[in-house]
Image 1 (cartoon, rainbow, N blue to C red):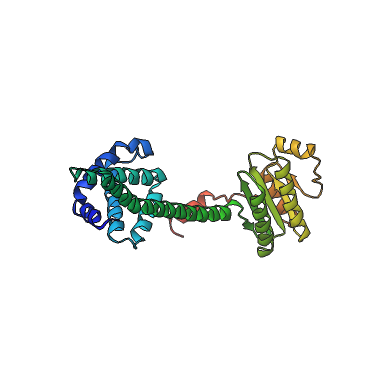
Image 2: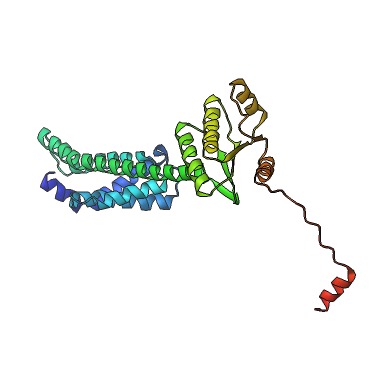
Length: 289
């Protein structure tokens, strides 16, 4: 950037910032930030313009750019906020520089445009790259977290575990279900595993095959798998595609499946008789005896 123009911009930063703040305020509704409070919007804009001027004063510094990009992502603001803001800053800065000279020739005009572009273009690329990188990192962390929660194996009693499945099952998730199911069955020394598909909205041919493969894998390592949550439409799908479920107990609800699991493990639910206290027992308890 031209040294004289750089000094002119820095020395007149207040005027440029004021013009930029006014212009950015006019496009608030256009970049999907209309619902943001005015106070937060103004404060963030001031931080944004500080990042811009920091970059021209210290071109090698990227810390402020990284921190600002992360803040915008955490606020949930769109990338267009950054790109629109920088385009407005470019226009405002060029207009300001051109007004400082009464007589503008072609060379001066070209020098102003080139100098501002040499400053703003790298900043645009850096901010966009930082924003994209931070966003991809956040998405990656969220994806891992969702995967960990998408196929939990829950021990509910000694020898009995439950895997509740919720949402759509695709190939990647089916692989995760299989891994968690086998590892969890061995880890918890499960005799019976209940796969609950009550929360799976659609069970097509692919999903049905994935579930049956998981149940078969459990059977091969010596445990019994019970499929629960078999709704009428799911039963019809399984029959239509010709899947043999004779090796696996099935139940319509988790409650019925759990009762079957108790039976397989040699246990049952027994109702305890209610404890009856006579008048004499009540009187003794009141006396503290």
